[in-house]
Every structure is written in C-alpha cells, then in structure tokens.
Length: 281
Image 1: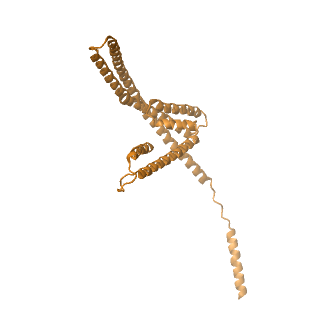
Image 2: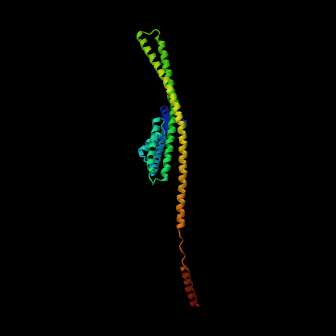
Image 3: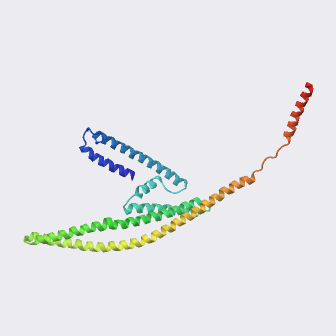
C-alpha cells in the first residue's frame, strides 16, 4: 500500500513537472529541481520498502522451511504476489496452494513421530485456507455489484439508446439503410434480452454465493477455534516438557560432600605458627 501511494505521488509530481518553472522567487513554490528531488526521494523510499519486503520474504520462507512445510521459494512468491489480488483467479490460486500444503502436512501427521508443532501448523494452514476462501467469496460478491451489474447497466442503457436512435432513423431512410437499421434494431433487442437473462443469472449466483459465504464464515470460525485449541494445548505441553526437564535436573543433582580435610589443614597452620611463636621466646 505504501509503495502504491508513493508511485501515485510520483505520477502526480511528474505531471506537475511538465509546467513547473526552472526557478521562482517564492521558496515554497515548486520548481523543476525541487520536484525532481522529491521524485528521487520517493523512488529511494520505494527501493527501501522493496528491500525490506524482500528481507521479510526471506525470513518468512526460512520460518516455513524450519517447520518442514513443503513450499518452494517460487510457490511462496506466487502466493504473496496474488495475496493482494482483487480478481477471483488470483485469490483462488492462493487457496489452492494452501490446500495442497495442508494435504501434504496431513500425510506427514500419520507418522508416529509427528510433532505437536506440526499439528499446530496443520490447523493453522487449515484456518488460513478457510480465511482465503471467505475472502474470495466476499470479493466475488463485491464484483457482482461493482463490476458486473454496473457494466451490465451501462450496456443495457447503450443498447436501448442505439435501438431508439435506429428507430428514429427509419423515417425517410433508403431501402438499403432501412434494412441495416432493422438489423441493428433486432441486434440491440437481442442484447437487451441477453442483459435481462444475465441479470437473472447474476441474481441466482449472488444468492448462491451468499449461502456459500455464510457456511464458509462458520467454517472459518470453527477453524480459528480449532487452531487456538491446538495452540493452547501445545503451549501447555511445551510448558510441561520444559518444567519436567528443569525439575529432573534439580532432583538429579547431588551437592558434593564436604571433606574434613579443611580442619586438618587449619590445625597444621595453627601448630606451625604456635611453634614459631614459642621458639621466638
């Protein structure tokens, strides 16, 4: 989002640069050189953001690899590049990738030595798959309103205007033009009929998507509850293992016995000093 905002700002500055003066008596007035400096600074900030983003990707990939997830660097890049996509295909590509990862982890869970951490990862992946699916359904519903129905309304309006215009041209038209206009009127009527049918289709699709979204939202809540349940259990098990290891070391420790040799050594020192003092008399 920050990169997009900065690129938009650069585009605005570049437009301003076209008519900007090379110098101005008012220091607050933008000049060509000041605008170029601002653009250069924004480009540097974008480069810094991209560098930080790459570093975050590497860190995330390292954490994923450490958990034993079967994800390549290229797969991660594909999912991240599509994660902020608005088209359904990109969003579903992410969901399908996550689902494939979940199936792979599921086969690993069957092993007798499967770790609790892997179980937590499995439920977390399941939760994220449901979350992406909910997002895809939400985007599909939004597209019906903002993209399809809006565009359909414009097409219907244009076809109706063209049909009405063709009818107005019939009066006084030559035979050849009349035939063309009649074909145009019929073609626009077919467009209007198709628009009405597609409107009905979109209404059915919208209703179906709303039903799917309701079920998906419930499934997502179940997935979150499952993940948090497993995480809580995992945290408890981790604490128990840690405390067990600490206590076992404490109970296994035996302080060394104190040797009485220190008394013999002190006694010898006192005897030596006493002997020297007596000799000095």
